Image (cartoon, rainbow, N blue to C red; front, side, top):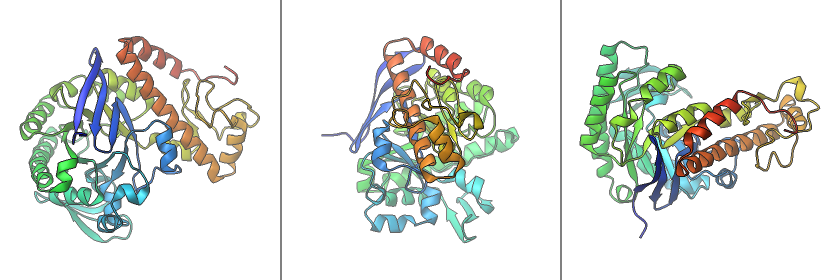
Length: 380
């Protein structure tokens, strides 16, 4: 019988780990990158093509789906998996980040957050209990605890207060999840470590979360403008404070070189809008770094987006053609660019898993970073 949630580590190399999460809807190979399907769609992609890129799991968003089409409607229509045609695991974030970043007239108190929708100005409240209820209605496989996010530039007093409240909300999230009946019997819940860049606050948060007990643990509050050096400085200690036998998820990250550095520091799961958003704005990721297909120099370039890439896009279309699509604002341009970028990210994760298994991660990571600074030329 397939377990509700089982995480195994198959190999390690330094702090890095490779393994798998097994759930009823399928296995998630780690380190894993989760394409973002904010509003029940990975933009410009069909679910089958997302799966073909190598994705084992995608991310959906509580905030956006509660506003439109509403979690209650999704539940009536059979749940998020049936609604969007994705039959593998889905992780839903709690909505906390979007409440803080997208909403007007936000009011926070111990109960939760009251805000006005960025769509129509309607008033809503998300509490830990409501966040878990929405994720249950969506049918999420991995549920995230509701937390309070504050900028890393906030005073330590503000950061400490937000971390402490997040831990109280984590307890309420766990209790609400455990009361979820059949959903709790097949889904998992992750807690979110907070504390900005402060090692002591992070340690206190990790201790509180571990005492509550979760299936996995996220490092939250990063990738919010602090820069890569500061983020890596935090990741030098934050993952080590979390249970070693549970998956560690770095929320909202990131650029390919961010992911490589975070894997070296013990992170197992990632999500980011970058590959899909970049695909819609003309940026392609390559082994030699990102390239902007809007640039005129690609107008007669008959090479693939990335000569080292085995994706269907690179095997079929030229930079010149995709340049034409992008400059003409043809929707096929966004579709092809997004497909390539998702294949690139999933190939990177596969390469990382293989390098860890072979205990050659340092060689791979250093080689990747060196090559990523040099854009490949056509035909290379």
